[in-house]
Image (cartoon, rainbow, N blue to C red; front, top):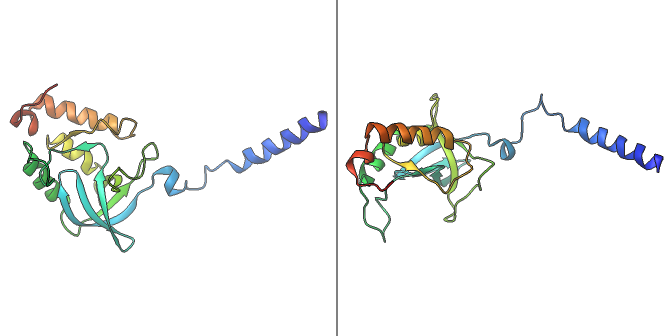
Length: 174
């Protein structure tokens, strides 16, 4: 019995020693480290096509719910065209961006789009937050555990209180 306890302690110490990664960068999949990409085009207020690793990738901005403007089976919603124009202005074709996934979320939505925080090179604030702060979109509640949500909720609250964008132009419940 004593020998089993000593063996278990040695194994735990060895495993624990191997877990100290303070000096090593965390793997991208675990840490949600960003990948660089280039904007190919903006689809609408919350979706874009980005080129990363030589291939085009459909990206849904994590935590962002912009009014619909291009879905074939749905009518154009209030402020949808303005949201799309704002996204195009913030994400011009050819812009260098960083796509950061969130390990608390799935990497893809039900349509196969990469879920990511999108940051334009040399900018501190994500495009996700900038769209919501400008009143072009609201927080997508389905991403309930996303690490970016506290900032997005604060941006939405400020936009709503100031009557920015869709908060003054559209009839909203709630």
